[in-house]
Image 1 (cartoon, rainbow, N blue to C red):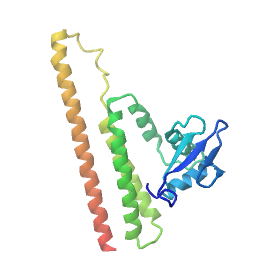
Image 2 (image 1 turned 180 degrees about the vertical axis):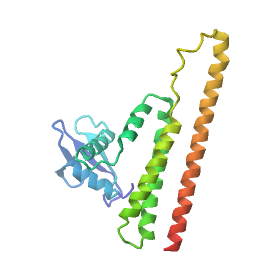
Image 3 (image 1 turned 180 degrees about the horizontal axis):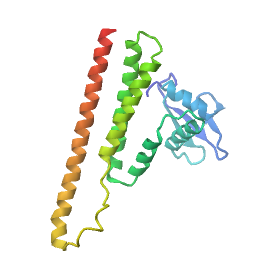
Image 4 (image 1 turned 45 degrees about the horizontal axis):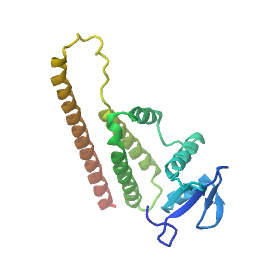
Length: 204
């Protein structure tokens, strides 16, 4: 997102204590819908507290998503939301942002390819099918990232500290290897999807 406001500069949105938003590039008060439109137009902006200058961009973007979901324009399945919440505080939380960023960029590029492949027609039926498949793949990925619970831990016999040490080390190695395998599988799936899209584009 680098279009900014036509001048190459990031638009600064000031947020006041009364929750009003002020677009400094147009010298006018704006709404969350206006900010959502800026996102769609790829206009780069930052939201800052009018008094302290604190960066509030993340919380405001999250608020936009929250309002969209509440208005019935939901794009996030409940299963995804539950899994996402489950990752907070876990080991996969550090890996998730980079993977989500990569996935969303790939999804956006794929959407453009789909439109071109359909000859400019509105590709809703095809798009919905592909979206469903992508979400299935995404949910599988989320499950692959999940760290297995210790459901049977209480039933297992107590171990000495000497026995626990190698098991703990082995467990960490297995967890790391599992995450690596998950990433490799995800990349392979995304590469396959990209090849299919390239093939579709060449036939159009």
